[in-house]
Every structure is written in structure tokens, then in C-alpha cells.
Length: 446
Image (cartoon, rainbow, N blue to C red; front, side, top):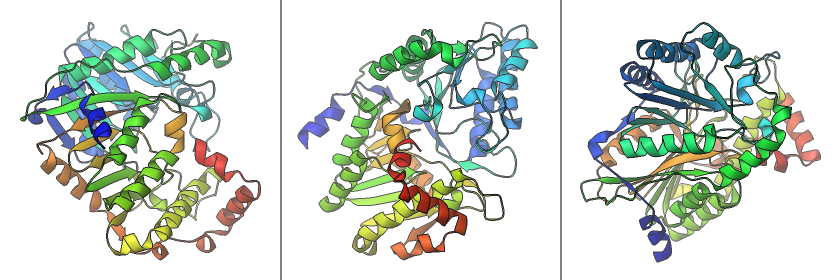
């Protein structure tokens, strides 16, 4: 236990005044905050997300960025999105050239075009994507697991619920921008998606492999500052792949060193073995655990029964079966309230929250889904907060009260639907997956 505690104590930390941290409580509030920050930017804006969608919300964000550049041509604006995701249409939709068409159009119509860098983490999207998060405007880091489109930004009637945090700190902003410039933009595998003459993926195969190797070794450069009793400590973390993944290592240690309470948020109940094992050990130690997860109908892959079923629509049911098995195995702990499972559901909105909170002292703000795919394939990051004197406790309690208002407490595994209650087409799909033993493979990449 001492070794684990020292592991956190030995981390380089950035000192932050509690007044410079803010929790945002809704997708709509996040959208307004981001737009206001862009409008007030003086010298730099760095946007990093899985995608910037060619829909109303995505166009609004890109238009705001171009307007900011028009007002101040010296403004340093960089956008990074996943290379593959930007060049295809939505899953299940007709084939298209994706969001890159919008980036090209904006660039062609402007005297001050903005580069949108495509980051290819792997040669094919299914085997790894850019899942880094962070919107840096001047010295503010706005961090969320959300990407940029209508549903994530609650632009119309529906929203996808995430977590949203703001840090005002030059050292944190510099550290995250330094990583982008040194490890992403400088590599020949990274190209401007707003340029119609960009190379094809097949022509980048060799450099993409080299790029991934370098990314797996990359880390944030963090100044080690003394943190006083009136401050909190911040450490940005990044990870890629199974080996030497610092983000995964610290998530594992975070759960392993818990003494009293763990809160875990994840949209997809499919823990990697490391987390599953540490959760079991924590329960045996008597640690109280809260797991907040989306109901299957709040999963972004869920397809309502009245709509045409597609194979991807089987995923929420696979996750629910995982959760039901876990709940059944821990029925006694659920009954004693040592283990609390909170199912989130709010109308036809969806759930995308991630993060870990331990003993009200350690908080990991992250975009990682805490699943095998995030653990092995995607480029992920997070910000570890050390708050040993409780400066942020009231803000986090307000955040979790806000999260829990649309949850139902699972009192028994029987509350969760079983296979026999699923629609016929779902049952046929799951039987076929089991018959060919594909479920293990799917759990690793989805």
C-alpha cells in the first residue's frame, strides 16, 4: 500500500488554485462555455476531439473558429480529429466522404484557412482511434469526453450526457499543447484534412506504424510544482496500447489504493481485466463502490424496436448481459449497499460519462471508456486531480447529485433484462455471435 501511495506522491504535479476549477453540468452549458471562450480568445485555440461533425453544431463551432481567425489573423488555431473518422459517414448511413468535405469547404472560402489535422492512430479505424480530449483556449483547458456534434452539444432536442470541467492554468495548457505540437503535428503521418490533395491512407501505412510506436512512448511534459494545503495537484496522463501505458497503470493503482469509496462512471459496462480484478479486490477489502452506467436504451448504439435493426444495435444488449452477470455475482453486496449500481436513463437521451473518484481525494477526469478497447487500442488521456484537503469536494458532490438525478438504483440483478426478454432479432444475433465464439473478440474492439 505504501508503494502505491508513493506512486502518486512521486508524480510531477501542477499546483492549481481551487477557484480556477469549475464543473459544468450540462451539454448545453458546455456548448455555450466553449463558444464564449472561442470568442474571447487572444492568442491560441487548440481543439482535440474524436470528431468535429458536419452538422449544425459542428458547423457552428467551425464558423466560430473562423470568425475568431478573421478578427485576429495571428490567432494560433489548431484542430485535431481522428483521421479515419473524418473521412467516412455515420455508421449505418450511406457511404460518404465524411466531415472532411466541410473542412475543405470552409478552408476554400477563407483568406485565413484553418488546418484540421487528421491523426491516424492505426491503419484502420477499428483497431485504434484518436480518443484524446481537451479544448485549450489561451490558458484555459476545457475537458470533456464529448466530441462536437448536435447530440453532444444538445443543439436540438436530444443530448448525449457527458462530464465537463474547466481548468484555468497556463502550465496545464502549455503541457497539453506541447504534447500536440511535439508528438502529433510534427509527424509525417499527420496531414491536413482541409487540403483536398491530402494523401490516401494506403500511402501512409508505413509512417502510421512508426507513428503508433512513437505515440506509445510519448508522455506529457509536466513541471513539478510544490502543492500547498490551499491548492490541488494536477497531472495530465496519456496512454496507448497494452504495454507501458501510464494512463492504464495509474487507473489500476487508483482503484487498488482505495480505502473507503470508489465511484466509477462508464457508458459501456465491459471492464478490462485489470479494472475488473481491482474492483473485486476492493469489494473484498470492504470498500464501498458506486458504478454509474447507462441503461441499454441510453447507449449511443441502441436502436428502438420501431426502427430497422442493424447489427451494431446488438452492442447495448451485450453490455447489459455483462452488467447482469456482474450484479448477480454480487447480489449480497448490492443488498448490503456496499455495491451500488446506478442506471442512467432520461427520455431518449444518451449517456457518455467516464471517470473515477477515490476516497474523495483522487479524481480522474478522462475520456477513456474504461473498456478493453480503450485499454489496448485507442490513444487516451486524462487529468488526475489530487485534492488531499477537500477543496473540490462540494463541487464534485454537486456534480454527482446532478448525474444521479436521472438514475435508478439496481436493488437486484433481476431488474435487468435477460436474454429471453430481448427482441427476436437481438436474440438471433447474440446466438450467432456465441455460436461462432465472436463475443470475446467483440469485447476487445467495441
